[in-house]
Amino acid sequence: MNGAAKGAVIGGVFLAMLGGAGYGVYALVGDDGGGDGKSLSAAAPAAPAKGAGPVSDKEAAETAKAFFAAWSAGDAAKGAELTNNPGVARDALGDFRTAALVSKVAITPGAQTGTTVAYSVAAEVTYEGVTKPLAYESKLSVVRGNTTGLPLVDWDPSVLHPQLQKGERLRGGPPPSPPVKAVDRNGKELTAEKYPSLRKVLDDLRQKYGQTLGGTGGAELWIQPDAPDAPRRTLLTLVEGTPGKIQTVLDADVQDAAEKAVLRFPEASVVAVQPSTGDVLAIADHRSDGFSASVSGGRAPGSTMKIVTAAMLLDRGLVSADKVAECPPEVSWEGRRFTNLKGFKLDGETFSTSFAQSCNTAFIKQIKPVGDIGALPKEAREVFGIGAEWKVGVPTVDGKVPEATGPEAAAAYIGQGQIQMNPLTMASITATARTGVFRQPVVVKASLDGRALAKASRPMKPAVAAQLVRMMKLTATGGTAQGAMAAVRGSDKGAKTGSAEVDGAQSPDSWFTGFSGDVAAAAMVQGGGHGADAAGPIVAAVLNAG
Image (cartoon, rainbow, N blue to C red; front, side, top):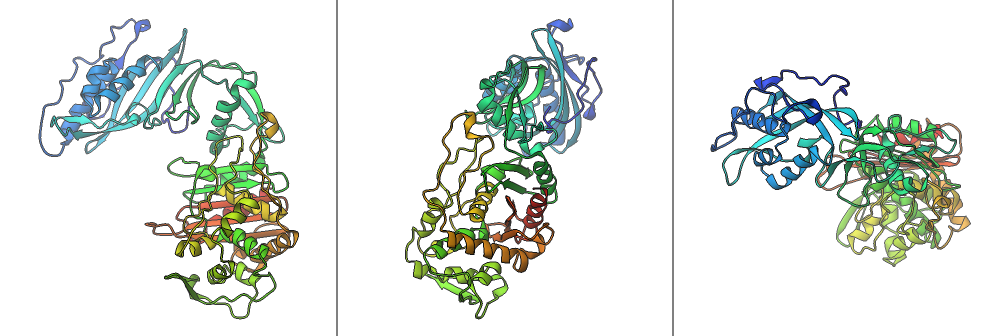
């Protein structure tokens, strides 16, 4: 059972308990239970009366009582009429008994907070004579009907099951794709229980490759997404299938370190890549919304984008790592003022130092000498493979570096404006900087399905690559990344910090990317502050594991 489905699984005996708010328990007994399908309570509660004004606690209790009774009795039509979306609710409640194969269900009300009522569901799912228990907790809210004036259950898919989202459905029976046993690059099994961040990755692998790996399906209860390319999510295994085996290029040890590292901060994501191959070593997220921001997100990366901007400037001969670059406290471009953190300036220092200290103005002052609005997108695409339609083996979202004019062009040079990245794309950018060659990241080898990998049209010039690595190493040992990278073992290491201002956010996003030996990693902590504050320690922990 997925971790979001709370409560212990009930086996053997079907329990009936007294619940809160004086409701009792409502239970449906199927044909095999000898019952008549009616509520086991003494009498079905009457439908709530029409009222006016805010819903009272009493109205909420009575509405929930009537809804639980209808649901437990298998009366989808009656239950749906007690909601504010009867058409959708009728289909969902009907599917609960038919498509989801629920043969018995008991609903035990819990605590009520105002117009919100919590409850526990203890069900049995039956397929071809095999019955398995399913238990979970959820809650509903009661609102006033806009036209009827009646107190009604505010219908949401989570009323039926807490993991259901809009457009999703419960389904039971033989799954469309057989299960898969995923292993890491060394043959160690990868499970969602041990590596929670890989749950979506494993679901994606099953959906894409399950039918080609020789496994058999068995029978399950699952959540069927609305989007055709979204992975289904298994809730309960009724009959064990025979999994097919799929080898990934992930590294269980690095993955374990990544899982632990992101737990240190809320809304954190990290990805590790092997620069010499493009192999993805780890993917981890710790987010309240369950979103895989590590590979599917898209947010401004802040000054970590200066890796690409520096490569472009070096490529065009406009700067040199060892030559002086002007770094005033502020600079304006087409009416917009840009400053450095706390207004610092560097007098007579090299471009390497400006990079290491993350001087915004040293980069923005180069816009006029470049004189080409397409220069940065071109460098990102031709050298770093950004926007080249990656085929990683699981669904991912590519980075975006669009052409920009005016103040947006200046913002792009320091990773703001319309630039969109995620930890996967930033880890790849760092891997490319490390070796001078773009290698498209993969979770499974292209030989598994013959897919064509994205390629960059040209490698980085050797002189550019050498200077870029030297600047990243200076950043790790004497620049803004020094504190975080001090924990990384060895001397062959480089990094870049970043913080990205997001409209409406109280604190900037924390970004950090770095390499150590043949491992590159990038992390983002949404609202985490400056790069070295939150994302830095995550990357350092992952690099040490690699």
